Amino acid sequence: MDVNKNSYTFMFAAVMVVIVAALLSYAATTLKPYQDKNVEMEKMQNILSSIAIETSREGAAELYPTYITEQLVINNNALIDGVDAFTIDMAKEIRKPISERNAPLFIAEKEGSTYYIVPLRGVGLWGPIWGYIALEKDLSTIYGANFDHSKETPGLGAEINTPSFYGQFKGKSILDESGNLIGIDVRKGDASESNEVDGISGGTITSDGVEIMIAENLQAYIPFLKEYVGQEAVSSDQPSN
Image 1: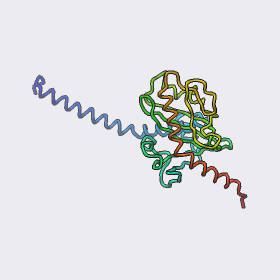
Image 2: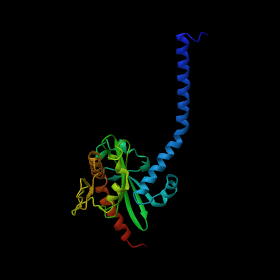
Image 3: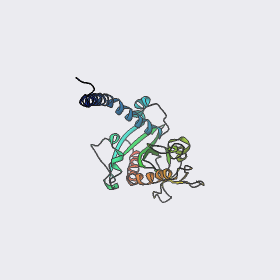
Image 4: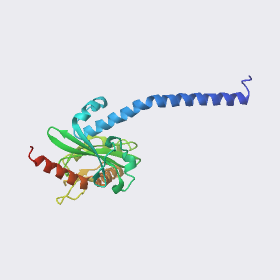
């Protein structure tokens, strides 16, 4: 075979493409279960972080069932059976009208207190943002929160995943005195009200994205939670036989 011919070059390139593609496909197939497991453990880690349980990814898998006592799915203010809350893709759900969404809810027990953990999904400056907010039993006070992103600018919008930003949310109120949802106002300085936090300097669009994300996502939960928590309180007050 004449290795100087164009036909040889084309044939050699084609064979190499097939070989490389086969190797990449094999690697992707082999590694996918490990990648999926890492994603699952990271999700558990983030859910636990919203109630101030800090652990490694590996440790999250062990601690998760200790603190997360229930996983519910809400659709149009009603519980839905037969859907795994943990595996719901929030990126797909937020594209639907609120009345059609399957909204996962995680209920945690920690040191004798109950917390309601709401997953969040929204849009920043350059791409999606997401996170979790844990509400206390009054459904207004935030116990903890965390946020993350995929493409926000380092040193600016990317600061949403730092404790200096999401740590401000603890103790803030998402309902007004009449019990109406007001969300959190992420503002430029002077965050003096009970539902206000300081935004990120130079990251206004990402900060606004967090504010909108919280308000829009919580709409799918608050009406249901008010009824659900009320029923739980009545049930716990009933005398046992």
